[in-house]
Each structure stands twice: as structure tokens, then as C-alpha cells.
Image (cartoon, rainbow, N blue to C red):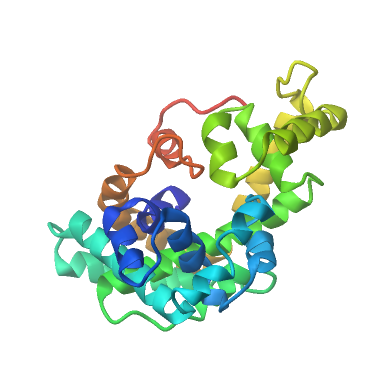
Length: 285
């Protein structure tokens, strides 16, 4: 299900209309819109809150945006811009679908999102508490976002149990199947911080001396992925097998279109994940 609702949420990061909506309220530049839009449900927070909630960003990078963005736009303005841009993006991807298709999708997504367990899940909780959208696409996007952030909160909880810090997690993943050139810049870590993280990964037994992932590290990685899935299972148990299968069917054409704008190097990793979900070979565990 993650491979179906995550692309719906992700239009807020990658569609030109989403960026234009942020710029319209004074949030010029990609990262101003990102940090303002994603943290807006929390209120006018300073950097330490977002560092904790978002997990993988270097504190110095977050501090360049927060709290200064709140002088450009209030959290309420950022939330309106976020929803406006997402709805406009989804409208481009769904104009051929019948209204009844979008209404049913929104209703099932809202039913699942209404069953999220919010205790200990800050971003999931604050998104779940937002007012329901007026139109089907607004309802659909917000429900997908609540489910996405709920799952992300659980993923961070699983990562914390490994004892790795955020830069170690990002550096290790880039030795597996991601690009350091892209991700180091996108998360704001310095060369010195990155090199020190890799040294610690060697000491912890997650990387060999030549920076190859070890069996220990790989097993721990898959344990995190499996714990993430278990922690995210509640809404789908509540929706039931039939409802979940129906929602998957309804989301398929929307997710397929939304995936077309997600860059291959994105930290989300969805294009490969969706290929795997369709039966392509998956990495050996």
C-alpha cells in the first residue's frame, strides 16, 4: 500500500504547481517550501523540532529555513499553499478519471487514515488532526499524507532502535543502492560529517574497511524495514482485506501517473519499489 499512497503525497515535493503555490505566498526556493509545508501542521516551530521529526536532515540545513520561513508565511498560509499545490498537481493526473472514482478513493483513504494510531507519532498525529478537505482531491491527498507521515514516524522509531544516528543511516544506505552525490547534498551533511559517519559504521560492523555493506548491516536494515511495515499495519487491518484491495485498485492509475514526476535519485525510492511490487526482482535479503 505504501507504493500506492506515497506517490500521491509526493506530488507536493516534485510537481511544478506545488512549488508555484509556495512561491505565491512568499516561499521562494525549493527548501523554504519544503520545510514550511511539511512542518506547518506543527505550528511555527524552530529548527530543533523539525530536525527531530524529519530525522535525516543535517541540523545546519534545517536551521537555514526554520524559523525564518515564518517571517515570510504563517503556518496557516503554508498549509493552504501545500494543499492548493497538491490538489492542482493531482488534478493534472486524474482529469480522465470519473468523479465517482475519486470520491470512492478519498472515502477509503480517509477510512484508513482515520484508524492510524497517533501515540508516539508526531507528524502522523498533527496531519490526522487537520480539517477534512472540501473536495475529493483535497480529501484524497490529505488522507494519503496522514498515512505517509504515520508510516514515516514508525520508520524513524525503528531506525532509532539500531543506535545509528541520521547521517550514519543515510551514509550506509548510499553504500547499498543510493547516490552519495545526490543524498549528501539533499540532506545537508558536510564531507567531514559523512566521512566520520562511515568510520563509525566500520567500527560498528555495518561496513567493511573498504566500505562494503556487511551481512550484519544488511540484516539489521531488513529488520528495520520489516518493523516499519508491522508498525504501519493498523490502518490496513482496520480497513480489511476487501477494502484494502479495492483501494489499491483505485489508487493504481493515480500512483502510476504521480510516479512519473519523482526523480530516480529521490530519497523516496518509489519507482524501484513499485517495479518490485509489480513482480520485478527484489534485492536479495
